[in-house]
Image (cartoon, rainbow, N blue to C red; front, side, top):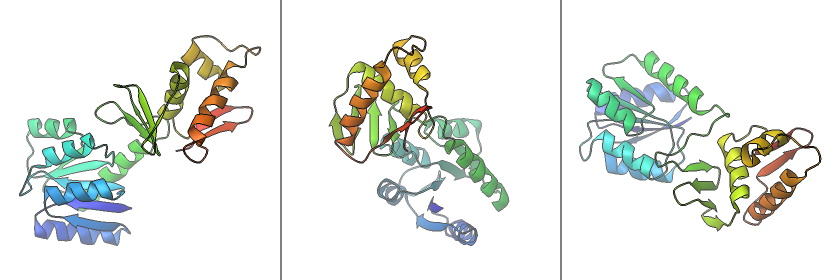
Length: 227
């Protein structure tokens, strides 16, 4: 994994760097919030370990800034502050877990594994704090009902958007024709209608105009969004 540690305590940072490197991870270190934000927004990390007490801004602010910027990398906050209010604040700012110092290195690894298992489940896409959803190069914002692919706007009808949202909620999972009919049109499966096929054809044509094919027809089963 590619890990980012945002920690200003030199000794702890060195211990974490050495231990995680020995586990086979590539570790990058930032000693202040500003550098951490810049790195997290420019490099695709698999995990972020974030200290609360940083010299320029606190970890809560860093975490919130990252989530507001659309960074969905899993974050574990690591801090000596163990108040319930602080733990709640950390989780509300977008952290996936909160680990109090001092801690055993094996506990950190176990918590990282637990968080990774949660975020890697293909059944549900984790929305950003603002409610928007990103899958690959697709980004949907429900506040403005806009979709972009690689930053380019995609003009969809209401039903096309409904189909795509259903696929984006479960990237990699096959969504059956009957599920699409039931969820988007509110009707049970009807073998005589080809409305799903028609709308999926239109949707795929619009998306393919801006990049490689991303909606796959799994013949005999349904459709899935390639994450």
